[in-house]
Image (cartoon, rainbow, N blue to C red; front, side, top):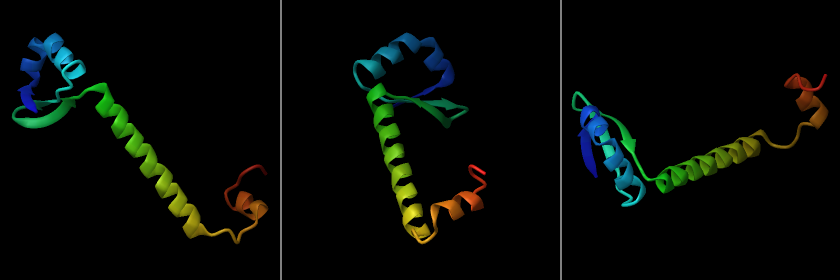
Length: 84
């Protein structure tokens, strides 16, 4: 994985875009020596989004399991101020 300053990346943007999209390289961008952002292949981004979605679903399922199912729907709607 290559690391470049923002200025260097700006000067070579088209080349970096080709390298990330076709060669599947990852490039870390820095400002004043600090890591700021990254250019990654679209497939990497899609995988990250899929993982985030799965974590969200897992957290929602865990929250539902912890809440239990003992409360009637009408009572839950009332407590959440839904559909009154």
